[in-house]
Length: 351
Image (spheres, rainbow, N blue to C red):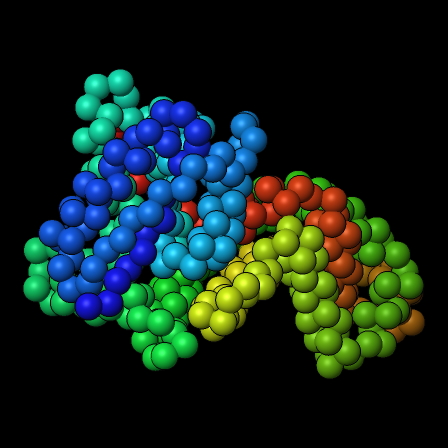
């Protein structure tokens, strides 16, 4: 029978004691719910981060331990309080990372062990499900069992493990697609204040510079497209490399999974950066129409100005502003970038 290994990384003190006491019960509960695979729940005592810390730091540090220990999934037991919209939550699940974080302060003083077990089981369920699985539906249960078997299979011997990771990737991209429709990727730019400030400053400077007007007019659509792509790539690479979000496989077993994880990370950041680029384009177009009056614009171009000229100016301005955002992104902290780029599904179990 294939085995799924769920590592528990617990901070010293009460979290470590609770994790050690729950390991056997968690393995038994997971076996009862999902007998398609075997379950192993090793426990490691490690503070991971120095408080105060946020969920992004905890997920990143737990992910490092997962890769080092060659686990399939990992849960972090921490005494660091976690909040969403100023409300305490018991945990966060990041299916892309295969990591869940359980916060002891939100469990309360009464029935802590029972609530911790329920939350841990729920986090594991969130890490391997598609988010809309119905435990009472036979078809969903069968699909979940198949995903668990894929997760437990060694990718070095079979494509099943890679297939599971690809499913996580596609599920994450579906989530990102939903975020685009709901305008949620805007938060990447909004939460990265230094990058946004630098982008706006560069855009304002470009918009009122006559030399930029003439360059936009002379570049042509192909060159404008190349400059735009280059600016998006520049800020995306700055964010990923600067925040050390690009993983390197430490063992052959996880090489393909890490490749897929890096693809998902690049897609996550790219969608956020493209959202920033489109926002800057709209702002540049409106600013050009309102601030760059037609007689002055025509004098700078040397010919009558049309709507196409304003579009070209907005295009080049948004590209230059994005390059400015890349310079500002280099000043962001690693934690700020990770928190802005990654999406977590909070478990709001009452504590």
